[in-house]
Image 1 (cartoon, helix red, strand yellow):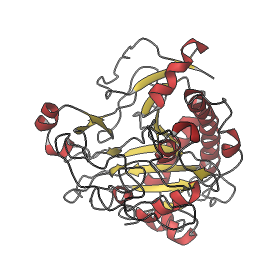
Image 2: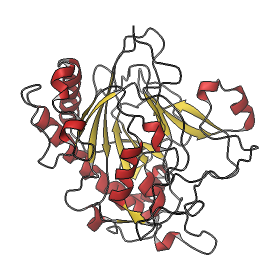
Image 3: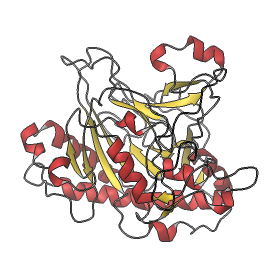
Length: 394
């Protein structure tokens, strides 16, 4: 499949002001195919993605029932701590602190925040997920159908990535073939904060990069998920970090300023808390795993990224950044709190995609040169994910 950039049009009821660098992609002719990977280097909103409306509506609606129509005691039967299977299962509010996993692909930079104001259920759709039919009939089947549709969509993104790097279209096909526990669907529920305000510094989901390849996010579009024109998402949603000039940074409210010091502020390179291991399995020594963010940094701010009608939000994760040696950046993002007193809740479907766990995670030879040496030590995709999961435990 290929994508084209349509003329920018705003549907009735759709919010304007997509963040700079966020592209809207749509299925179309092959003439503009070469432009699509540029958009996917950080983030994109994709329409015409091929996933059936009823698959999206069912997965979203039944997942929401899991959180809103069951008790905490019932959900705890399927807790991650009970299943003990690489992050699979339910996590209650306060169990995850995603900001601790880092705002750089190597994990060397992170932001200190309290645990997240969120609950979640992780499905791997590999035949080993618990049977939830006694709580929400049909949920397992709906999640599996959605999962399969989104994985098919991701194959297109990996082909676009290969073409953008000057490689054969099917370069990543073998690594992404078959089942892998790096592919995981996060049914993310952000409960109402009315009557239970977050603590100081606490967000629905702290700033971080995603840990796998591409993330395919279905944001909560509002009452109807797949309406053609009207989008009315609940308040308190996705924000992405974008570069800005010094004047914008200075005028931004403190809570909107980015995770990195300003361009004019030189900081010492931190001692890496790197999750990328050397080939012999040992952690790199200080300084051997170099963060893209070390040294002088740019001014950044967090801007809202509301969904467009029928659009899937896609962003590059750590493993894309490592393979491309920084040509594609792992997108720093977070989920903001709603306005004080709001009783709104939010349900998002987040599919993290990845190759088989034994796949080498190191800069591709075509992305390394004398002028652009390798920025990351070698590890495997599975080892990177497990270390990031461990780091995010509150």
